[in-house]
Length: 89
Image (cartoon, rainbow, N blue to C red; front, side, top):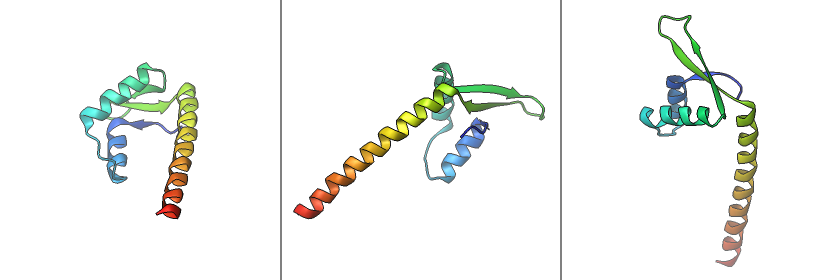
């Protein structure tokens, strides 16, 4: 996930993945993640329309890995609960 993306491209990608998010939600989120040091940004002015590209920072990568580990743990716990319900009901 080290590849840089600009806001609108992120929005399109998320919508293609059936993640319904509005631009007026995504852009403030990107700015907040940047202010927390989880993303870094850089302006690309080589095209006719300047675009702000976002990349995950080293700190962001660490937080991402922690969140994925927590998600997997939660998912495993939920699957365990569902299996118990299937056996009991």
